[in-house]
Image (cartoon, rainbow, N blue to C red):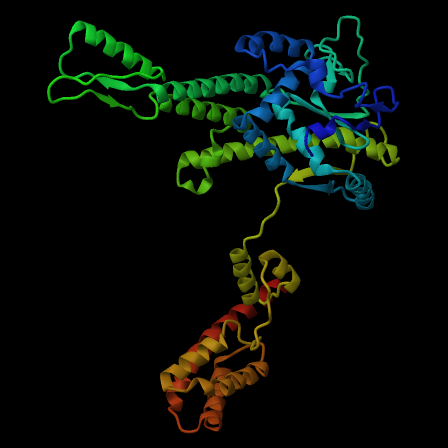
Length: 503
């Protein structure tokens, strides 16, 4: 949802409880009420006038200026979008407090909260509260979680009462012309170390650097270095210099040739002189903007897999800053939304603790390789994973293996038969009957595999192989088979020990 789409909407609850429209009489266009604060913005304005306005609680003009700066300067807007995406991309959930004997009560609390949140646009509300790190605060209408524009609120001083400012008055005055906001009808997140003044200052410096850069490019593209070889008399030299100056300034001019073999040359320099300075300046400002919001410099270029300690440190710092902001937003919802919902539902009394609460948490992303590895280890330990869960977590289309051997963990019939066939020269077309033979033996095997059982089984295999293959080196085949079954026997003993330990 774009910020300008917030302008023409109705807020269901006002400070006095009546319907209030943020359209014709409120905020048709902030430019009509506040003008263009960027047109006269300067470092002195930011450090002086805007800082004092914020301290007095006159928030409309500074916040409108930041809104416009984020729209116009990609250097700042990109960091703001990344910040909101990082927090807005978190999962939200309703958790319960584990208190013995009150489980059913906690479930009722959780059900009531979940139904309340599911009726509303939670991701949009979370992103709006996340922008409090930019503006110093963010406000939602509690009943609908609708975002309220930053310039539609004011305050009584730096820490006083919040006031609703639908008419976008730049100053409130000492007579209290603006009505205090009913805090039960609004959700307010306050941020102490916000980026408002810092980002406006970066905006001024970055736009100035870009303007100087463009001006430098224009001037340097017209300049030419003129080399005058040979000798000229005083009158010719004066005319020569005048013509050279006209050419340097982009006007037309004619240069006479020099004397002797060397002729006059006009040499064009590179694109511009001093451009690296402006480029480095903008990179430095980009670095400052990222540090102000994420607590780390240029985290997009310092991925954790970059192989540098700095990259890992920057990412860890940014992750901690995002995690802290998510915890603050969760706390705001818990105190200013959850409690009101549960009290209105009659589930808790004022001051009584809730047994369920809203929480933001990172989205859980499964690693398919790890999931497959864990599945194999569980299978070796005698456990079987749910097939639907495994499909969901790996994203793979899974089908059962056609030949399984439950009694021989780790036997690996296909691998075993291939090794045996390779050692005695059995054609691939003969392998099917051998697999069936091993499956039949495995299906009839007891839970406990003893050396005596292995000896009897090998004898049975030797006796039945002629039926399958006819003339062949049965001893060689049996040796490979015994090696494989020996490994299976070891796994079988381990499984038996595990089962006894669990029992």
